Amino acid sequence: MTVEAVINLDIDGPRINRHVYGHFAEHLGRCIYGGFYVGEDSGIPHEGGIRLDVVEALRALDIPNLRWPGGCFADEYHWQDGIGPREQRPVMVNTHWGGVEENNHFGTHEFMALCELLGAEPYISGNVGSGTVREMSEWVEYLTRDGDSPMARLRKANGRDEPWRVRFWGLGNEAWGCGGNMTASQYATEARRYGTYCRDYGDNRLYKIAAGANGTDYAWTETLMKQLGHLGCRRVTTTAFHALSVHHYTLTGPTWEDKGSATAFDTDEHYRTMVAAARIEEVLAGHAAVMDCYDPTRSVGLVLDEWGTWFDVEPGTNPGFLYQQNTLRDALVASVHFDVFHRHADRLVMANIAQTVNVLQAMILTDPDSNALVLTPTYHVFRMNRGHQDATSLRVDLRTAPPSRPVGDTTLTTLSMSASHKDGRLLVSLSNLDASSAADVEIDLRGGTVEAVDALILTSAALQDHNTPGSPAAVEPRPHDGAVLTGGRLRVHLPPHSFVTVTGGLATGSRD
Image 1 (cartoon, rainbow, N blue to C red):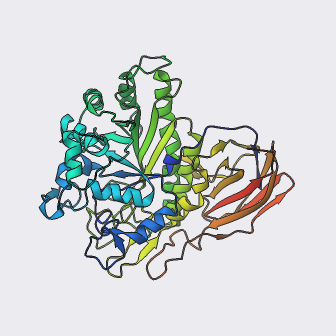
Image 2: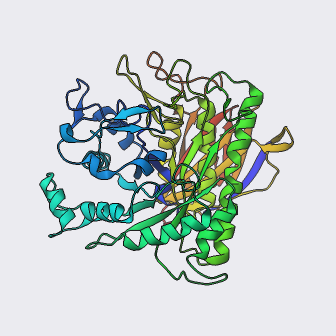
């Protein structure tokens, strides 16, 4: 059966904020040390200790932002421990992630240098759990104030005369858990207090993000929204924060202690993973609905600043380092998430996959023995989809029912799609989640003319396939001849467990 769909090229949806393709770097395992940062004495090519092959790979994704220093680590991190001469920085214990010693060699200046190399905006998570209002206020001043002030003088003494531009600030992290074990009402009060004393300096305008809910805790979101306005209001009444976050991971194991293997899984586990990934639609829609009650004009942003798969660590690795492999299954989890992000572009302003290097659903794995760099299947989804960044979304309407299959007590739709246009180019992303059956899609492209199309496909013989230092290209994109444009109809063949992107030029005068 062929699935029939319609895309109206002349009916624009909301803009897809490039920041939904954001990333996350925590002081956790080998994400920072051995991942982003190898130190100035390393034989690996670097700039100021920052690993340059990692930078080059991420620049190819047009990485828009990077969240740091956590995660749970953020609420035990005191930023002044990470400035000044490295040999004089105090050592701390990373109590959340393995109980290892943290030497603070990678701190504020190193992070800002990394963002400059990446061409990415910094997103800093401040310490609400164990810090103080003054501490976060002074961090903002240190980074962004020009002229003469105590923190500006301290920054200059540490070698940086000009202030940085830092828009994105997280007011703590997971305040319901590792960020303080607060109730929603306790945290709402703290968010207003911290947000009040995080100041704008010069032309740097802060975008303050409150620590939001865990998964489907919609009551947490409602409590925060009550701090901003009244039920049914058409404007918010305070700027203590401008957005609120939510965290949602794709978990499929029977218990938290047994989350399942990242590579040794069967078809039933694959389908359960896809069902768990598709729940992100319910999560975002639920929080958006609550926010709409208090902010119908959608001036407050929703930020999904932790998402991704979470499996058991690789055998023989430190359980506190959260190192897992990354298969074609992970890539399909990512592609499904992005389709949902595009559909919620009217409210979702940022998302950050957890995490960028060597932790959970990483883009990049670095081998400590050979120093090899491996690009994961998830990395390739980000790269194939980068044309959606800051593009105008286009609605995809199905004229026939999509393929589906029963999974436990629910039904999984095995076809996922989204589309957008930017700079005279159409980009359509399609995922076939079925492990064994192909799918064909025929799209009626209305309201414009699309010229010749090109397609890429990401798939492999088995869902469990992944890239390693010895086989770095086992799962990577290749040209796909299964996309054919005839007149105004685009026919796309999707092999089992595959992700496909199709791009085409929009004829002059038909769009843009």
